[in-house]
Image (cartoon, rainbow, N blue to C red; front, top):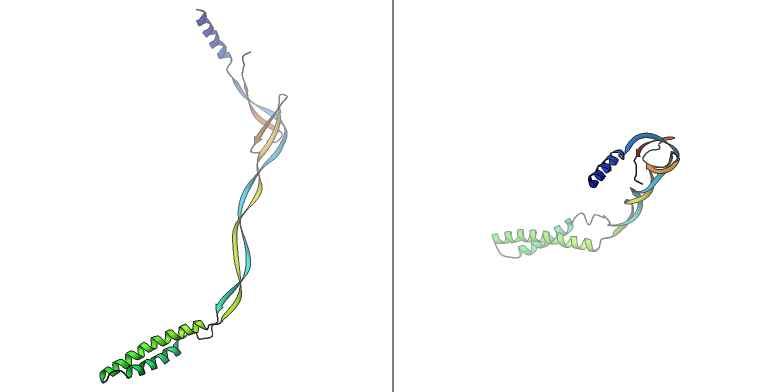
Length: 174
């Protein structure tokens, strides 16, 4: 019987000890901006002067015609000296074709070997990704007074002179 009486009185007191909530306002004492440093990427570009080496264009490099002509004539003469009759004509034509190809290649190799080069300066734009640190406003550090007690909160906006608060009243056991 004593146990059930204790349980009943505990349940009765628990019903009275429920929390009560209501809205009110508090007086703002101070609202200071709160900043955080963040990293912001950006692209930085600049111009550089570079030395560029390139072959001179004096006409030798553009055409291997001289080597081809000389090679064709020499090949034709050598081919003409081979064989007899109708075979002599075929050997002459084949020698001219082979001589043309060989003469062109020889001139190409010689013109590369003795090629002169020019140096030029060229302006080149270069870019790189950089980062800078910036302070960003992330909220307000607010100090406020409610019923003679001072409180602090970090809020997303400046609340002004008055701050709405939600108050919870709860009975605590002694």
